[in-house]
Image 1 (cartoon, rainbow, N blue to C red):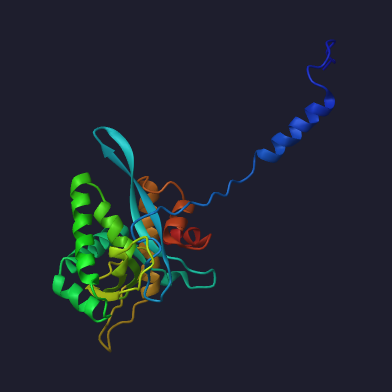
Image 2 (image 1 turned 60 degrees about the horizontal axis):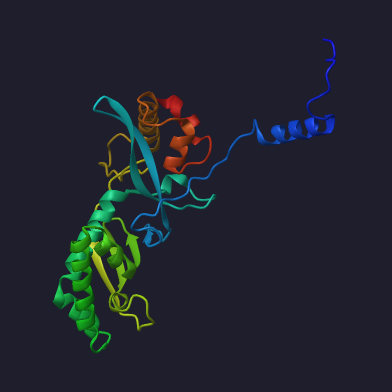
Length: 263
């Protein structure tokens, strides 16, 4: 090649600086951390071991009216430390547990006898009438706006929800209903909701067998089932990559790649 006869458009120093900046900002792996979505029970839901549960989702491509759209299925999953066994991570359907909690909460707050018992046990004079008035105002506001005013305000009194094997233990502060933005003496209340967890992801059901029955390797069976499910998700486009499955299942990097060949 022959050198051009015209003068350079930019000087040599500027050219080298631009090339260096392009190299520094291109061709590298992008490690983006998915931010958790703000759903109703974020910050108050804990698993059977007392570990906080965060939100995550799985995506599925659905054909609707001739067009393909992506639908998200939301879950609450255990926030586990790096040293914990990933097979002990719990995952609950967000839509289902939110529905169960809200229905039970509305029933309790509509039960004047239950409210009276909770308030009287803490000797809070006048609090019951204030709480009942607050509940009435919230319902009227919700009806007027046709929105989630009732749900959002009810959850402002929520202290904690513990997801046990067969029930949810709900802990509230009823005083926050009457005085949500003011200092007040707490009126703690607790109730339980029967709740059967559905198995999903890596969760393994407990199987009780006869004493002399053949002993199957339940861990291996579970791994094969997971491998087949993940393979279907990839083939059907419900999961775009192995990395997406790894994140949705809350597994360590490389776990899905090692298990997939079992399919």
